[in-house]
Image (cartoon, rainbow over all chains, first blue to last red; front, side, top):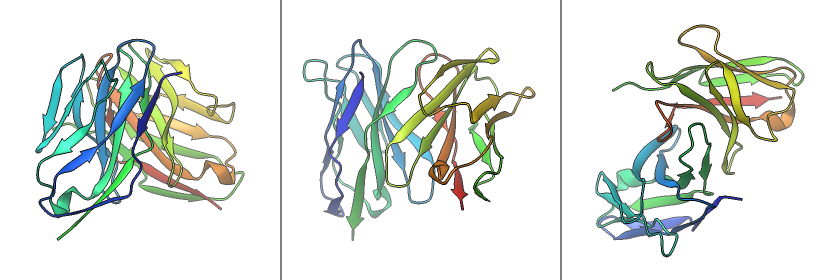
Length: 113
Length: 112
């Protein structure tokens, strides 16, 4: 079935370091891809999305490019801040009307000053 | 900006009791969902709901679970007889169409 794999971490970085969180997916069709973020004690927030190949989603300095040839959607940020400490979930959703979101296991990021 | 809201934020119950988790989706959305996240594990799909009926449900969503949209704004998840393994964070989500789902802050259910 459809699935998402991502590096599980935890990842610990110093402030202003470069961040990459790898995400790959398996899907029978052409899904939309998402990154959700969960800050400590809070719910899931949509961070960015891409709906077709070569689309780049971006928000709050984070970027991810939909790579169909490598079935990947890696999350990057050039300079992380302490406030970026959270769990990041890569996810996919097929484009039929009521299909579920399928989440990866999440990657915990800690940014230290 | 409109948000999905959920109440209560934390529910503690005894095993075997019934619980109702409540959600208010974003007002113009048409598709509604419940997910759960057992502590430290993946977020798992439970059920989707459209046009006043269940569209899809997972194997987790057995006869102990039910969903309802009792009025034009609320969307509820009922667990009839809670088990210890139902302890989890439950997320409601809604979407306007066949794409992005917006999640609420979650209800943490603790079954003792």
